[in-house]
Length: 149
Image (cartoon, rainbow, N blue to C red; front, top):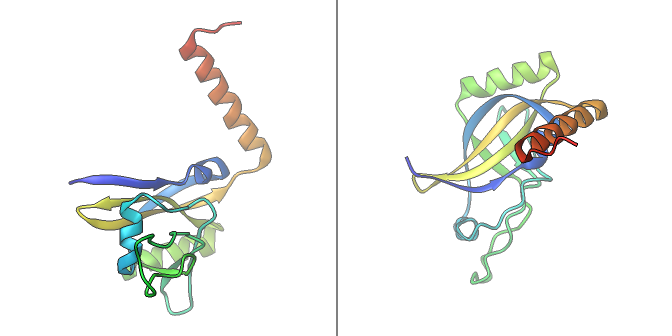
């Protein structure tokens, strides 16, 4: 399987404890695909929601307009529908309701010429959790460098 990563959401790993991930398809327009092939997308401000009809949507994912497009170019920050199986949606909504988890996009990639997005059930980190993670990273970095001062 050919997987080419378009964008990673590093902010998600910093702000949340990621518990379970799901792969979903995206409903996109032609100029959006062309813009994604150029590697232009912003995931850091985006979030995922489930509406009353049981459909999953991503909001705030910004795909810039295709530079060679015409008047039929896409809207940059429209909400986009995610494609998941009904059982997966029911599982996700049940966990969100019972455990108080949120859905965050973690990465966007091409998989066999199809655009897929990885979303994760996540629990928010507190400020002290973030400090603790940063301290662990600093220690690991010093050990790798051999800096024991």
